[in-house]
Image (cartoon, rainbow, N blue to C red):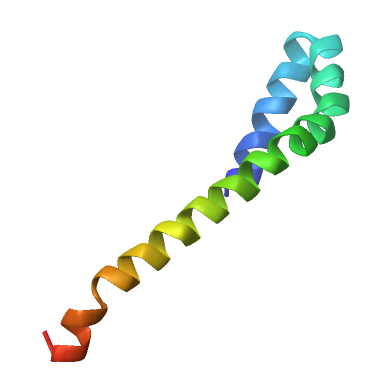
Length: 65
């Protein structure tokens, strides 16, 4: 459903200002490539917090709480 919304917004932008819509279409893969390292860092930070939480709750889980 999100893809359809993005496509409809792009079609609206194409109708209003076609050079900007074509520029957005060309630059989208580059923006994705720039954002990729930040996504990887986010996954690593989330995994680290999950590990710390599991270690902190390990005694309670062992005691059956």
